[in-house]
Amino acid sequence: MKKLLFVFMLFLSLLLHGQDVNKLVIDERTEKPMLIGFCSYEAFTDTNFGWWYQSGYNDYEINESAIDDLNPNPDEITITVVLGTWCSDSRREFPHFARLMDLIGFPRENIKIIAVNRAKVTEGDDVAELDIQFVPTFIVYRSGKEIGRIVETPTLSIEEDLVEILTKKNNNEE
Image 1 (tube, rainbow, N blue to C red):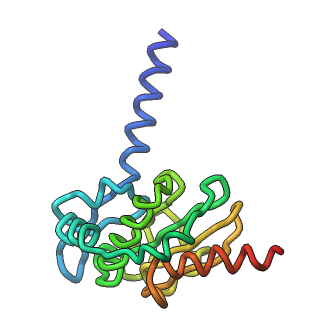
Image 2 (image 1 turned 45 degrees about the vertical axis):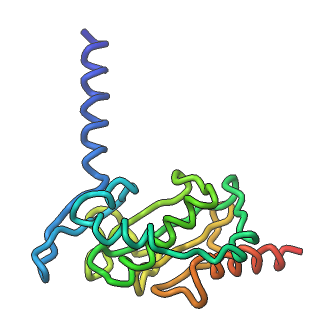
Image 3 (image 1 turned 90 degrees about the vertical axis):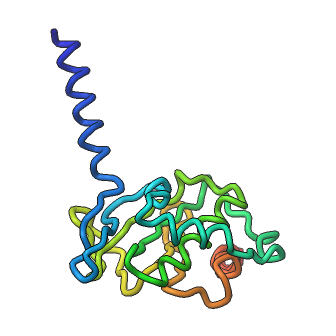
């Protein structure tokens, strides 16, 4: 009986945890669905978001020469993306970022995606310590320490800005 109760509790906890990812709420301004909280890539294939995600992903032309210099070590590097599915900059830049990460083979499990509302907060997932002023914000960490971020719009391109962040830190260590 204890074993059955344990399995039931495990199943229930997994079910409840699963509801915390890809949460949809209604945007009060547009009355359309938006994501809030932690998200997986699968959330962006939903019909609510797939129309902008897929076209942005497929149509992005990556600067091939820049990615030759982009070789982040997944044992050291993690990236947190804070975005708003209601935000035109997020709708433009996040699919570009996702395509780049897929192209270089960067593991998706090293990327944390957090969707915020128009006030740049989430329900239950505190992003206050991340000091998010604009979305999207791509925060790059090396061994758990922030080494740079891309805020709202890249200076050159997602790939060139990431190369700058990663090589600047490497040069500072020498």
